Length: 165
Image (cartoon, rainbow, N blue to C red; front, side):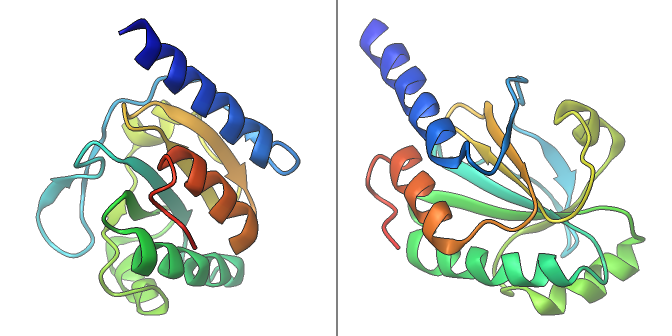
């Protein structure tokens, strides 16, 4: 059991180092969150014991659309080893649903609520990418665009080599 905890700590440290040139590190505990989907029923955003990457988007965000393309690639290649989701903020449900046309249609999408935003320590701008480990702990929060190459390095680490783009 000590080995597992040490291994998870090591993985978190390596991911932070990989993204550290671009990111603000967050050490908040983020329990698996339950949000209302923009596509229907309530479901858990953190599922199947895999690491999770979530992008906070808002309507009329050109950089969100660009980041959405990299997330689509992640989703297509790694959906069996990494959870991918979108969380809409700063817009009505209708506006956020309309904005979903710019993203991969199969990526789960949710509407942020105040509890979720408090749990992640808020956010300053979109896109904001959140990376959670397999235990649902927030490893990092990055404001702005992350290139596919940087994202691929981090996902390879947190998926223990199962997500290769």
